[in-house]
Length: 252
Ligand SMILES: [Zn+2]
Ligand SMILES: [Zn+2]
Image (cartoon, rainbow, N blue to C red; front, side, top):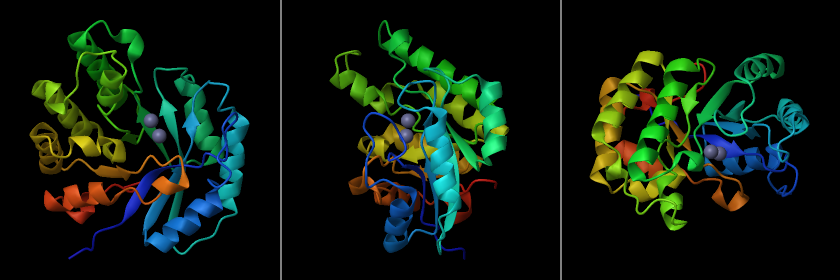
């Protein structure tokens, strides 16, 4: 039987950003830490969007550093593509993936705040955006942290409350089937850990498992203390009987 592949495809090399760069979060430092933690394959990213914090040259420098980094573990490089907020035009993102030789794009819907009038409006807008990425944006390989922003929106009082179970199950069923049909991986992000006890979240993961959707594991680490933040995701997926072959790696 195939052994469980310890992976993390959402590690931000935040050394490569303007404004608040993290001195320790260089590509070689992240790789070294992941080697020590026993990872089999990892992916390094930064955000790719039009905000001043993330000029293109930062991603170019990250990729240059990546190309010089050697390791005993399988290394991949990609970017987290904002599809709706300060988004790079998709044809530019496509050309860049090619030019920089990126292994993958995570596609993200972030806070979606502009679309919020009330909880129902938020649910509809967020769902529409996720579905757009899955069905229309073929250059995205994996959907980052679906539905994890509700907690922070509720904390900030932007929506009245949040539980994963507030997402209508029909939306989750749609998303899962679309991911299966379009060959997109769905990420199980550390920031969803609060939802792991929610039966609705487990039902969603169970459906993804049963449909054969690949599951990407991500810590979303921006700081060194968060590198290694995949154990809760691994435990959940193992407990739910997700077979090792269903854990996503870029290009398969
Ligand atoms: Zn994100
Ligand atoms: Zn991220």
